[in-house]
Length: 533
Image 1 (cartoon, rainbow, N blue to C red):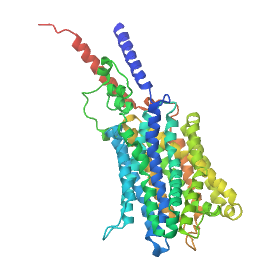
Image 2 (image 1 turned 90 degrees about the vertical axis):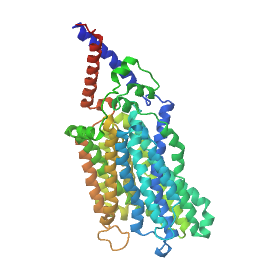
Image 3 (image 1 turned 180 degrees about the vertical axis):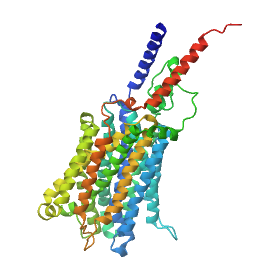
């Protein structure tokens, strides 16, 4: 009995030591490391958003330079490919870096930023071959490579921010980093305005001087990436990964500037374990329905969101025409008006929605905000679908208000929470993979929507750009948002206030216990003197 009590007391002491190690997170207080984490990951998302959004402002410039014989407009098929290549690359990068982050560890953080830098510079310097591939062809190729880096940033930044944050601030920090997407959108339009102002005289004198403008617009996107690449490569291995995957308590402690006793290090560092096989572990974990349904919840909710989120973009032209930001008499005025209009569109509910999520995510919870967002956008899309022609003809201000609310509750809703939740609700050994799969599902939804619904909205058109089937399409988006609500209610758990250890799977815990027991048995055997016969 006393032996059992002693073993229990020893185990309790070791547990307290580990809890002390686990409890001191970077996000517990606002210290330099917390700020560094936000700056390092946030700058990446700023760059991602800038690089994705800037192409919308650049393609009209490319029309004036390369397609003068086509009415100064890039053919829609070519424009779709140029814009879509980064989306394809993003999907690849989300899956690739998601699995790599679990196989090789979070220490690969920074390689995705190098891909972004290389891709951005080569996009900005795209040129034609003497024969064969045009500058537009090379631009598409480098946007594919750029997309791989952008995609890799999703699982890596989400996982690292999650694992370096405390339970009470984790969601807020992840939402704050994700909100940099909105700032990146704004920055792209502002940089375009500044460059257009600088080159106003040159562009009015010769429209071909836009060649300088578009290249600078894209190239400047590499500046924030350059500024933070050193911080990423010097980021220590995540203590969670070191402890729960590598089973190296000394490495976990070192990452936090702590030390552990030799006994604790020996007890919890599994140097003699066989090399882990991530694919076996992945199948083992998600082979259980209770775990698979959570992955289905995070992946499907992101997939459905991004299908419907595309519907908001279909209304941008209508909003810009209504507020007087349509085509102008000269190329410079048209491009200037386009950039100003895009700033207005971004500010119509989008940016405020991000920061409402930052403020409320640790008060209301991720699941409640996601449910609220899906519910309200279902209703708002249904109103737009049912009253579309009536609102356009008789009440444009009401249309703009509903559009603004839809943007607001998409960002103060599932657009942010679908990024946060998969970075929390899975064990450390599959967290990056699961986040990558969820993010790639969302990007697949966006790709399907951008190609599929571009065709659907033109059903019944009697003139180019009429979008006769748009009201019915918005009704489809309302139904998609409703499906997102159902998926959230069924399969998405709440993670607010929970330590990440609560999501570690029992199978891994059993392995740790078995290893401890083997070590204890070996220690007892070694302590018994061997008697000579």
